[in-house]
Image 1: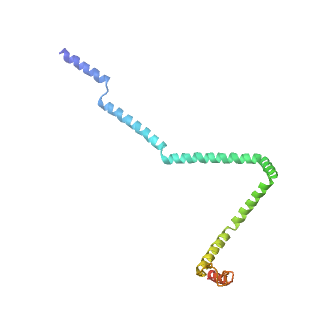
Image 2: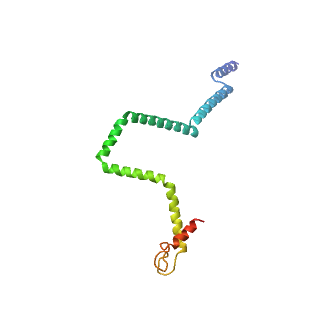
Image 3: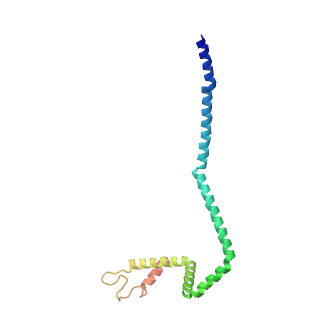
Length: 167
């Protein structure tokens, strides 16, 4: 009998030292929830759209800072820059003149861009029309008539081409 009492008190001591299964399950659930929250936080931090937005914001801030610092630098040093460019132009007149010529040419081309495209297209159409309608067989050029001169230079081809474009 002593054994039963002794074993009973021993089993009660074991229960006090170790939590029961419900407590263990509750602890596991709490840990699982905590880990789940941490995973959700990591997923939201590593979301590709969020990372892309952060990168865009960072780049935009850097560009704004760079642009503002460059603007500030140019404003504060504009007199020095102008005198430096003028000195370089005086020391190198030929390259300066060529640069001016190229810049002028670019400006003229940009103002006459659409007109030139139309002229190029008409010239090609005229060539194509003449090639198809005035070609002859034999050793002569396909643009030559009986006199050896091109039909366009004789006036006949130009008249027909003009009629072709005025339709």
